[in-house]
Image (cartoon, rainbow, N blue to C red):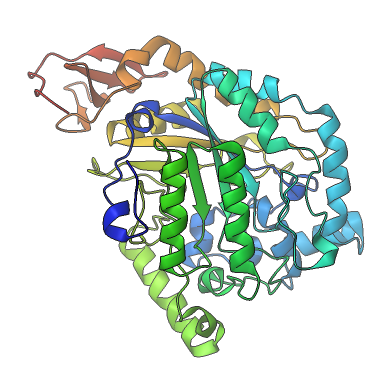
Length: 439
């Protein structure tokens, strides 16, 4: 059905069955920052958001360029020791050379074997580097060639869809450091760093280009959106017209008159206090504020305690970063128990897991530690697919038997499945109580 560019019309869009059924997606953070592939790994992102650690200790390698600008940061020390005064932009040539070893069909096969039903590629992160040869001209001449040259987005989309999976695109609408290079020092700076000027039109043109070229099944924006609601709603209406079964996430908070004021000291400090107080109330759960229009929620490195009425998606890396971090140790990665138990818990509460893969930038390869975890998921789903794919939440998500063994429950085709959290988890038909007529 056609959608008007109004909130009432857009809100009639329903999350399609394929997204409810999918359960597992693959996120891919892979950009210029994947060449140095470094961030301090002592603190998790929850410690940064809660204020227990400073922004200079951010574990996200994809924030390398920002961390490089922060006085006293571990990234700054690392960069000076290994690269001297080389500018961040110089890593782009290394990334392009690494693409010579890239085999998108091999990636797609690994994702399919893991049991993923959709793949979301970061097409442009906060550093503004594009993984497709965009025809939208950058206003700054020095960044006119700030892309792969090769159509990485198109090649991966074709490889993924050839194996029966859906394909989505991530776009950083809220931050682009080629337009505004002021360092992000705190939580409120994330919103305050949204560029103005020529950027809103540039971002809108690029997202429209992605929609027109690749017809993404998932349109995944990050941070916020640089245009006001009227223009945003027009964009979303056009997206749904182009991809009727497409979905959008919850990070489309439109530009507000308040943005320029957030950089001011007193307002910035007040905002930081309020955000951290809210995080304390939610137990440190990292979830963006809900905008007026979205299809599903996206808590980051976190899960909900109970079944959610609305669809949601947990987004996380396998270690403490989304992008590749060559300093991560085995202790930094999810164990097999942690990964599978978390996945089952998410599914039982009406969620999907969007598990990130962070390939290396120098050779375009997925590290062995990450491939191993993809195999774990594939083995589990191969043995327990009926309890997961196409399932819906039951009347309650979890329970403990008389022996103290924890389990999660799902409902599929009139059957209730009890997924016992052994190592690895295993599903069995649960017959203690009659299944409800519908999920």
